[in-house]
Length: 614
Image (tube, rainbow, N blue to C red):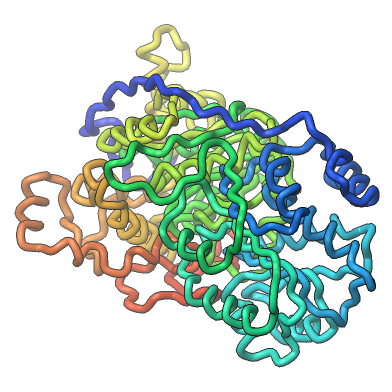
């Protein structure tokens, strides 16, 4: 019999769960494949063979059919396409390789960079580099290379001196070499590609892009330029296109090319893969943690071959859930039926570990990846079956980028977003963008706990003689699981500190939702005690640092405390918290620089599960 403090009821004093009606929307269909083949595109036979045998593709996707001929003709291009499911990397990589392999005299390493590919994140840089490596198998005289934060500068300088023809880099790292590496030269650059250009600007790389463009412009007389962005982009992309592109062709897949809409314009209609099934679960804050755990157990322990990505809002939350689930849900290593494998990916991890996690999850047949939005754009993680948005996205566009990690290249996939009763209006917000969700009932998710007597309660409801008895037993088992979580967290001061840090980073991130969504996501609508429960804390911390949040959940108390408090006190530097490049610690006055690995509280980023100690 388990001892220790009794877990307070998860199912009392919760707000009523409203009915969620599936909106009738006109779905924008995304055409992925076409009937065209690569043999029809006047490509080198060896390149076509590589695409068929190494990439296992023979038919051309929609974005490739529109983009490749334009780039082969020598024109600049602005490519607007939905998130990553249509093979955007190959749409520019194929023309780059085709043009460079045909140059006479043959390309040599001593020519230096002939193509410069800029991407926003390290994982996307590594993935793009591997794509070029595969494409260049028949053309060994063309040498690809990658520069990114977290790698050894000395080794990168040596590779640059030796010679790299196709250079893939993150902006910050390339600027570092422009300023400190004498051997880098852009005088021979023929191609400049900015992949995920809108994401690059969102992450604050605008000044770095200016440095890079000035350096390339001063060295190279002419080149071909390609910008790849999502369909809905902002004025920054428009300015960037005006600077980079000359006599360009606009390529738009799944709808017309769009610039930033005016406030009076109708909402943008997003296209999602036809094979994607989209769901929502409405769950009170107190029950969020056990709901997530029950869903993972149902898909990864009691089912086979499910590969799940869970999106959260901060590095601390990703690390906290990773350690907690690894300790409580993984089970005994001697039990073959308990093999739930957990990984995490966020910006507080060392680059070597991030690369290892990315490669392990990409190669695995099943498992769970807990991550921040570092994995939401552009990354190709094969065979992902479920996307869980444990923290709701900031915008409908971000929702689409997240779910784009599944149902890729025609395969089936599913997504589930977690909303509290106060957040259900977000379903309507998504419907305004032609995104329709079906509801999964909370009890249906929790019922997966009935498949494991580890969570059996004291009640004698196992006879299942009535639906009422079954519901009561399910609730008891959820409470047992919550108790297991709380027992683990409160077992050491380090675990409690990590849970509190994760809670604080969640609250700070919650203040950063755009003003137009404040009626759905507002910090004062949160019950702090219930929210703390979702981090396995038995009560809300008495002091929440810079967040300055009221300790009670009562609306009147919140109103009194907030009457004379400006909103700026809640936000502070919280905009950094949603980036994979920040630590998300409340009260940290300094922004965390790109490429740094801050040492936040409970720094378990490079440690094994259970690394929190007293």
